[in-house]
Each structure stands twice: as C-alpha cells, then as structure tokens.
Image 1: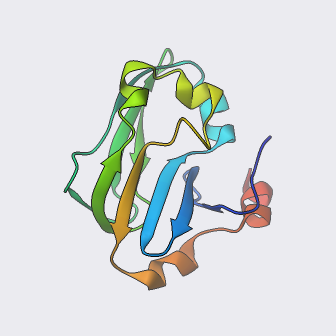
Image 2 (image 1 turned 60 degrees about the vertical axis):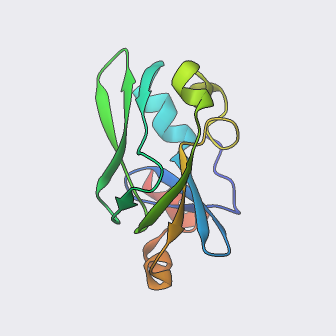
Length: 124
C-alpha cells in the first residue's frame, strides 16, 4: 500500500497536501483499492465553502457511491476536471493525477487533527 510520508491523512481515507494556506485533497491508495473501479465523480463547485468532516464530493464505483469528506474547512479554489472525464485516473494515480480538489483553508488549527503517514498506516 502506497502511503507517502509527505502527506497528511484522515480516518475516512482522504489525503491532504498542505502548501501555504492551500490544501490539495484526494483519496488514498487504500481507499481507491477498497472502492474498486471508479466510474463517476461529483466534485464541489469552485467558490463553495466546505467544512471539515462534511461531505464535499462523491465517488461512484461499480460497487456503490461514497461520500468524500473535506479534511479541512475552507473555500474550493480548484477542482480536477480531468477526473470527471476519466474517473479511472483516481484508481491509476490517487496521489498525483487523480486528486479531487484544492481548498484555501480557514483554520490552521484543524491541521493538528490530521494523521501523519505512520499513524494512517497503523489505522489501516
């Protein structure tokens, strides 16, 4: 299972890459493996306010639909349109090309609730 050390994680299997006051968000390698073949993605609208631990996106697979929770609160700055037309990218490249969206987070203290790679590895 691929768990990059430079990312932060949630107990609900989202990953976060912090860059200043921005956070790039996607699902982990473990999550995409459990979800199986992704066939459809619904992303939040640019400008939408998302709240930590609240649903922000939906991923549908051949198995079911899964809510994707925002790891931090903030405003959506960017969505990865390429996964809309090629949702299988999430399975192929969950940490790079298959990211979901980028937010400008509003509460830096929320970062402390995220898991380090070793803690996430122990969780799964």
